[in-house]
Length: 121
Image (cartoon, rainbow, N blue to C red; front, side, top):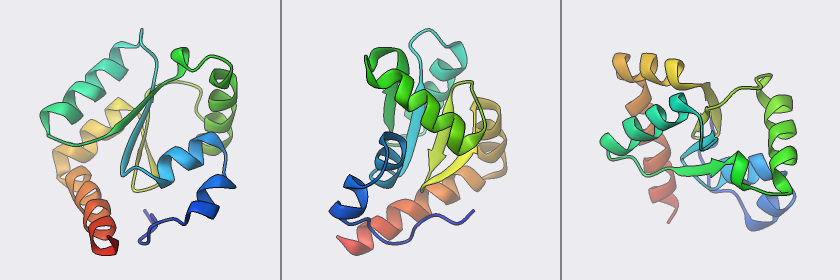
């Protein structure tokens, strides 16, 4: 998984779509809906692990909801939520996150992102 190791420039972020802008500026992003049980589980796991993450509730995004959904489908090929990104990379949904967590790989990815971003500050 090859995420970005450098902080994105403001210009690079402004020239991206909604999804790319969110994943470029946050180590962990969860695209979710408020009625999704697996989304709730994913957010609970992240909270319990003490991970700071950005949540975008697609059903609360108003006119941008459709745009987010189309961008996500184009980027990941998936139509379901949650869609979870770590360090700019799509890792999958709740089940994939759990598998990565169980192997220790999930926390490695989170720490890589946090370390890379701190070194730039």
